[in-house]
Image 1 (tube, rainbow, N blue to C red):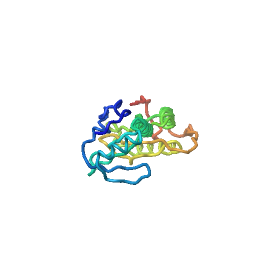
Image 2: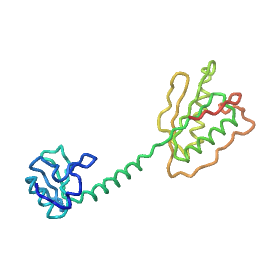
Image 3: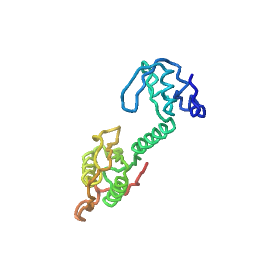
Length: 212
């Protein structure tokens, strides 16, 4: 192969497995030039072109027939690839999923506390799974549970939106909320004292809030 003083300082097979310069043994190769034009040429000729330009012959598509190469500065190429990978990773941020549980007879003050928690999670960019649990004879009051879930949907409408349709899993009703973008938060209205104390319109004892 043609000698290239600059290239001898760089390994022909970097740690990421990319073949460059003398490590490219298949011939011919398709060379993409700086102006976007392509040419299928003998690998020795491509290496000579890279040498004359003071650059590297880099195999960018090894599975193509023939393999595709570019004549570029490999160090600069890897730097640009790393920047793109970092930018792509930043866009793929993991959204945390919190969990809140209620019952058909959740008391009004407990309901408001849960809604406050959910609003905080949604405003922070998290998702929330709202679980309505029916225990024992509460299965006979599923309308209370559904009514409470609909109220929660209304109270969270300015900061969150349903990402899945409601579904039953055994004795639980599930909703999943995701953050809503570009909406101004509104105050949650407490029900008048003349209405039943239970948020689901039936009396209930205080239940514990369960977060994931």
